[in-house]
Image 1 (spheres, rainbow, N blue to C red):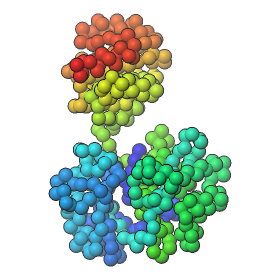
Image 2 (cartoon, helix red, strand yellow):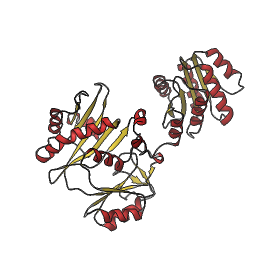
Image 3 (cartoon, rainbow, N blue to C red):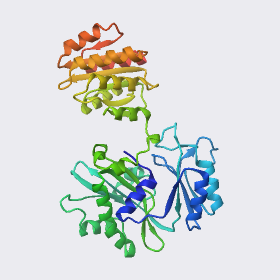
Image 4 (cartoon, one colour):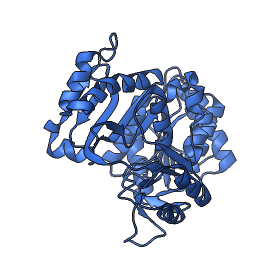
Length: 397
């Protein structure tokens, strides 16, 4: 689960991280009041959407020469003018795709005198089985470009979960960022603060880009991107309350109601599979034969007929879907249950695109019999390779 920048900063501030004063606003009038509350003389007006690249983004409704989704304001009138131009407009960045995201809230924040821009993030290093700090002196840039062209400038430090961040860990982070004086002192404290925030709230990603050193020598979190482990949200009612459904895909929201693992993609072949590994393999083989998957959808090992029906409805609700591939290997999951769910869903919502079904495993013959006797236009496949070729041919000829 992702949250907005202003929410991330409020959370980090509650743990003791240094952040600027700021106010989240939802209207131009609120933006005017926020400017009055903050001292100035420099304000920053930030679009709040769940995507990066906001500063370089462009608004669909404004001309190509218009400023992006993060703007400096040198007067209260500037704050109001920026709010009028940004609220309700569609911001397109390299992470939103061409559709963009509608800006429904802004974050008005005190400006800062920046001396240096650094990069810092925490994530789960699955190779090491530990939470890791990833830091670079090249902050404020696309970290992917730094990784590609100057990978030696990115340093990873794994943290021992038994000790947490030690003094030597914090010193190593400060050394990697080439910090001295007050900035180094701040980092020695901040490293532990960020680690506690990450672990105690079950974050999956904490990215600060940039982490700045100001002209007075102190450190400040200038931007913050936070994602949480969805499987741990049951432990954090306060975090779950931060969820903004307007920033999520409607199909993903519907899938979450049925405990379906669903992620919308940009392709044309809808996939319904049981098991994350098999779902990935299904997506890969679709791409191998020249098409693109429209989604990742894992119905799980013990799905009911109702759950399968819901999954099928979600796939067919995607207007980009030109064909559907159901790929089930029945272990815990029974093939007859899948077949009953597919038949029920097709009868309820109709079938306007080709449908290929590959079943194997528990009760496979009964499952095939249910499909054959349904009277529906369903193509059976012998194995995954056969299924992928048939659905790609049906969609692309």
